[in-house]
Image 1: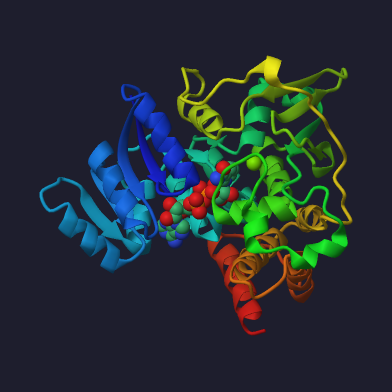
Image 2: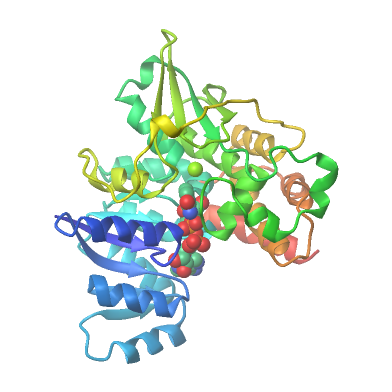
Length: 379
Ligand code: NAD
Ligand code: MG
């Protein structure tokens, strides 16, 4: 039986992870849940999975949950301390890191430092601190297992043969604006951008998928997870989201992983690895697949992808600048304060305003993150 702590349990990935747990009750025990502010959903999760520990973002929310669970045995904590306790202070073997954005960095790092296996959905942490996180995992003799569907696909196709890989190819659906002319980008509303053609996800990653910054973050994520040079990490648009990514070997053989667009498949693989078991997701119906198509990314209309490659090549503080500026820009777009086309502009300006520097610790990374947010708030 694997003991799990799930950070971000009320989100899209968190609820899918609990679905996997619910479908395999003999395989998993939930020892901690952490969430932001969705009290009602967290209460339901506690009643169903009975974790000994939960954490919420605010003290007010924690007090209310304590009141509602008066007779239960679950300890309710809150804030940064509570989150770190859920990440590192329990008997969990595996921590599902599924908080959104830079807020996931500290708890993910804490889980690694405590020697936990991390099933990583929170790609932003690896973008910000890939070198530190992979070094910490090595030093503690533990692993970061991918939850992101593309990285899970590559992980499944790699079979330990990284030395014989020519390149890996991340597939991108292309998002809702794959065919929209550039002139129309300024008029895109949050509702338009949240309507992803193939995946149902949290708000931030839905917008990230529409700008393709998500694929850029995934390039950096792949770089750290698999240790391949950036020029061996490619991206291709595949609108059907059936092929989740591909590995091309030196001999020209290309291996791909296919499946339905349901995150429960890669989440479950990370949780049962190296085993497989029956998954609650639907099955791929090959006879109903009309066609699988592939096309190049239009880098003019989607400049965020190249911004990510640029930040990744620069390394040091720049990937954090990219990620933090994007997070601020996405929130402003969702708040209708900037246009969709201004997201890449804000990232570009943030990179240009920030002299590149080395980062040696998580504190350094968080300082960069703070600087970027403060600079953007001052505008
Ligand atoms: P979401 O917005 O649906 O959920 C985020 C979760 O994090 C919620 O439970 C929220 O309460 C919690 N949270 C946010 N801030 C917090 C804080 N400060 N303290 C504690 N909890 C906090 O997001 P999501 O779509 O589930 O995505 C989560 C992560 O997984 C992101 O990094 C995303 O890029 C990645 N990811 C998501 C998908 C997907 O299909 N949704 C696929 C691949 C990767
Ligand atoms: Mg992905």
